[in-house]
Image (cartoon, rainbow, N blue to C red; front, side, top):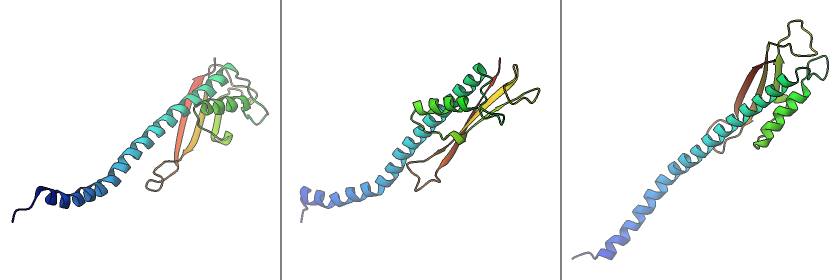
Length: 146
Protein backbone atom coordinates (compact mmCIF):
# COMPACT_ATOMS: atom_id res chain seq x y z
CA UNK A 1 0.00 0.00 0.00
CA UNK A 2 1.27 3.38 -0.95
CA UNK A 3 1.63 6.05 1.77
CA UNK A 4 0.26 9.38 0.80
CA UNK A 5 2.51 12.41 0.78
CA UNK A 6 0.53 14.31 3.44
CA UNK A 7 0.52 11.40 5.85
CA UNK A 8 4.27 11.06 5.57
CA UNK A 9 4.77 14.84 6.05
CA UNK A 10 2.63 14.74 9.18
CA UNK A 11 5.03 12.28 10.80
CA UNK A 12 8.04 14.54 10.10
CA UNK A 13 6.59 17.55 11.94
CA UNK A 14 7.57 16.11 15.30
CA UNK A 15 11.14 15.62 14.11
CA UNK A 16 11.55 19.30 13.17
CA UNK A 17 10.18 20.38 16.53
CA UNK A 18 12.61 18.12 18.36
CA UNK A 19 15.58 19.40 16.34
CA UNK A 20 14.57 23.00 17.05
CA UNK A 21 14.28 22.23 20.77
CA UNK A 22 17.81 20.78 20.76
CA UNK A 23 19.37 23.71 18.88
CA UNK A 24 17.55 26.52 20.74
CA UNK A 25 19.67 26.50 23.95
CA UNK A 26 22.89 26.67 21.94
CA UNK A 27 21.52 29.53 19.87
CA UNK A 28 20.40 31.27 23.07
CA UNK A 29 23.89 30.99 24.57
CA UNK A 30 25.56 32.31 21.42
CA UNK A 31 23.29 35.34 21.12
CA UNK A 32 23.44 36.39 24.76
CA UNK A 33 27.17 35.60 24.93
CA UNK A 34 27.75 38.01 22.06
CA UNK A 35 25.61 40.64 23.80
CA UNK A 36 27.59 40.21 27.03
CA UNK A 37 30.88 40.48 25.17
CA UNK A 38 29.75 43.74 23.58
CA UNK A 39 28.67 45.09 26.95
CA UNK A 40 32.05 44.23 28.48
CA UNK A 41 33.90 46.03 25.67
CA UNK A 42 31.63 49.06 26.08
CA UNK A 43 32.29 49.13 29.83
CA UNK A 44 36.06 48.85 29.26
CA UNK A 45 36.00 51.81 26.87
CA UNK A 46 33.87 53.88 29.26
CA UNK A 47 36.20 53.12 32.18
CA UNK A 48 39.24 54.03 30.10
CA UNK A 49 37.65 57.35 29.18
CA UNK A 50 36.77 57.99 32.83
CA UNK A 51 40.33 57.31 33.98
CA UNK A 52 41.70 59.57 31.23
CA UNK A 53 39.31 62.36 32.19
CA UNK A 54 40.27 62.04 35.84
CA UNK A 55 44.01 62.18 35.19
CA UNK A 56 43.52 65.03 32.70
CA UNK A 57 41.68 66.99 35.40
CA UNK A 58 44.51 66.27 37.84
CA UNK A 59 47.19 67.47 35.43
CA UNK A 60 45.27 70.72 34.88
CA UNK A 61 44.65 71.12 38.64
CA UNK A 62 47.72 69.62 40.36
CA UNK A 63 46.74 71.18 43.70
CA UNK A 64 43.45 69.25 43.91
CA UNK A 65 43.98 67.96 47.42
CA UNK A 66 41.13 68.31 49.89
CA UNK A 67 43.14 67.48 53.02
CA UNK A 68 46.63 66.55 54.20
CA UNK A 69 45.91 62.84 53.66
CA UNK A 70 45.94 63.42 49.90
CA UNK A 71 42.31 62.81 48.96
CA UNK A 72 41.76 64.16 45.43
CA UNK A 73 38.05 64.93 45.72
CA UNK A 74 37.52 66.90 42.50
CA UNK A 75 39.60 64.46 40.47
CA UNK A 76 37.50 61.56 41.73
CA UNK A 77 34.32 63.54 41.03
CA UNK A 78 35.44 64.20 37.44
CA UNK A 79 36.21 60.50 36.97
CA UNK A 80 32.88 59.31 38.38
CA UNK A 81 30.98 61.90 36.36
CA UNK A 82 32.66 60.86 33.09
CA UNK A 83 31.78 57.20 33.74
CA UNK A 84 28.22 58.27 34.52
CA UNK A 85 27.90 59.89 31.09
CA UNK A 86 28.21 56.38 29.63
CA UNK A 87 25.65 54.94 32.02
CA UNK A 88 28.18 53.25 34.30
CA UNK A 89 27.89 53.99 38.01
CA UNK A 90 31.33 53.79 39.60
CA UNK A 91 31.41 54.13 43.40
CA UNK A 92 33.81 56.82 44.65
CA UNK A 93 35.78 54.26 46.66
CA UNK A 94 36.57 52.38 43.41
CA UNK A 95 38.65 55.30 42.07
CA UNK A 96 42.24 55.65 43.23
CA UNK A 97 44.47 58.62 42.50
CA UNK A 98 48.23 58.67 42.91
CA UNK A 99 50.83 61.25 42.09
CA UNK A 100 54.55 61.39 42.71
CA UNK A 101 56.12 64.18 44.73
CA UNK A 102 59.81 64.95 45.01
CA UNK A 103 59.43 66.68 48.36
CA UNK A 104 56.73 64.38 49.82
CA UNK A 105 54.41 67.38 50.10
CA UNK A 106 50.82 66.05 49.97
CA UNK A 107 49.46 69.49 49.02
CA UNK A 108 50.05 69.12 45.27
CA UNK A 109 51.45 66.95 42.48
CA UNK A 110 54.93 67.98 41.34
CA UNK A 111 55.51 69.18 37.81
CA UNK A 112 57.26 66.77 35.45
CA UNK A 113 56.20 63.66 37.37
CA UNK A 114 53.46 61.16 36.48
CA UNK A 115 49.97 61.10 37.95
CA UNK A 116 47.81 57.97 37.81
CA UNK A 117 44.07 57.42 38.07
CA UNK A 118 42.77 53.86 38.38
CA UNK A 119 39.10 52.91 38.07
CA UNK A 120 37.75 49.54 39.23
CA UNK A 121 34.24 48.36 38.36
CA UNK A 122 32.33 45.15 39.11
CA UNK A 123 30.50 44.18 35.93
CA UNK A 124 27.47 41.84 36.11
CA UNK A 125 26.90 39.55 33.14
CA UNK A 126 23.55 38.63 31.62
CA UNK A 127 24.72 35.01 31.60
CA UNK A 128 25.71 35.21 35.26
CA UNK A 129 24.02 31.89 35.98
CA UNK A 130 26.53 30.17 33.67
CA UNK A 131 29.69 32.26 33.96
CA UNK A 132 31.23 33.61 37.17
CA UNK A 133 29.91 37.07 37.90
CA UNK A 134 30.68 39.85 38.67
CA UNK A 135 33.77 40.41 36.56
CA UNK A 136 36.17 42.99 37.95
CA UNK A 137 37.25 45.48 35.28
CA UNK A 138 40.20 47.77 36.04
CA UNK A 139 41.48 50.58 33.83
CA UNK A 140 44.26 53.08 34.50
CA UNK A 141 45.53 56.24 32.87
CA UNK A 142 48.85 57.97 33.44
CA UNK A 143 49.82 61.51 32.44
CA UNK A 144 52.74 63.75 33.34
CA UNK A 145 51.87 66.86 35.32
CA UNK A 146 53.05 69.88 33.30
